[in-house]
Length: 339
Image (cartoon, rainbow, N blue to C red; front, side, top):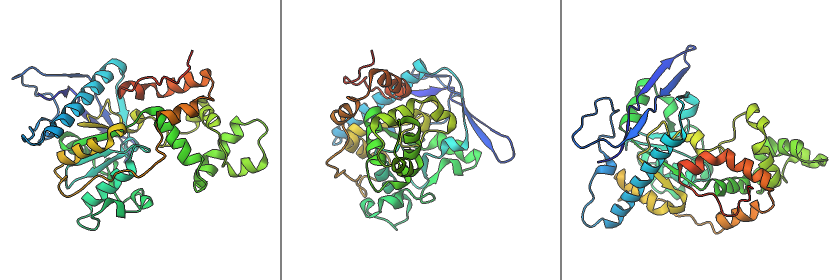
């Protein structure tokens, strides 16, 4: 029998005119005994995708099914162990949850975890034939606001209905590899002038001794050490929320409040993506795009970047991203020197 959240009731209230908040009471997660009726449990996806038996010739997908189910159980247990307080979610918190009504899917996108290709896939699925090949969609078009609907755009009853009945999935990545990937993409590529101006100039002003006028003006040579100092500086988050490219996954997708059916991983992207497409019953007509990158950020590359970060800042940064390590079952990197 599939594990399901017990008493995970969604309460919504309206305040300040059109502003509303979504309150999800995460009381406990437990595996019910066979035959026990649980009338207080929220309605689960009627298709029960993870409890649907596979055909005999699908042994590979059966193995994927077991792996995905095990990850979900580990996440639920970690949530019970490491979270205690009730959490209030606003419409802003639901903006990363993309909705495909045609196939009853909800996907929480996490930048630097193949989210461009997942958005492309969802554009194909929701386009009614306008798009057929995900890779034919330009990357910048996949990120245009309005091309895909998010859960925050729906009314309160519609949000509840979709959370109860749709297949919900998320893809995650080793936190520091994702962080290094975000740094490399946003601060070492010459074409990302908007990020250099928006964040680079601020980082240099705060965390560089005697910066040159050009660096203060252009912000295009931020070092990884300066980036780390910026992240762990308490003033950073007091001033404004983290940018989504380095925000923690648990803050973007709220996995202890929203019951995701599938927790895919970047490290096993292709088989996990194939399993999701199979559960959505679109695997026969659609293939998840494979990555052609030859310089993908991995553990060795992350270790190289962290080599020049002092143990003091390594420890502060690990504490900042600790919940993502715990919730998604990632080990502390061997290269860290936190003592």
